[in-house]
Image 1 (cartoon, rainbow, N blue to C red):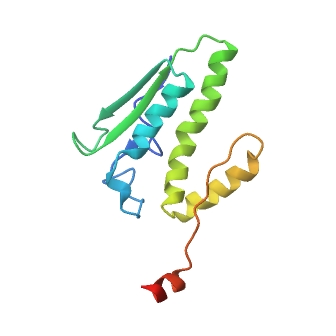
Image 2 (cartoon, rainbow, N blue to C red):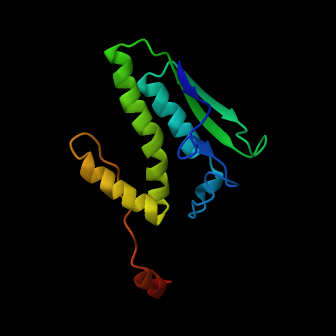
Length: 135
């Protein structure tokens, strides 16, 4: 069995650690861990978890984890290819949408390298000067 309790990039929401670099105000929500949990369930993982804790204390983090029984089948290999990629890139996408510079660069490269199979929506950046003029 392959498993983990949470993956910091997308399976953990904690404004004290994992999601501290999300600057759009949503770092206190549990959207990434819930999406990670739901995505892994939809992709067919043997075990999916949504739980509290994660090293920063009870009530300070929400985590989504998984477990997969490895039976050597092509079906399991396909689930792992899809779910592990989802597990990681979901968190990178979330940080990109919050305008994290490194995440935006990673998403752009991912979209180029995986253009035949996947597409992560890239954020539309506002012209700061125009926004300031309006406000």
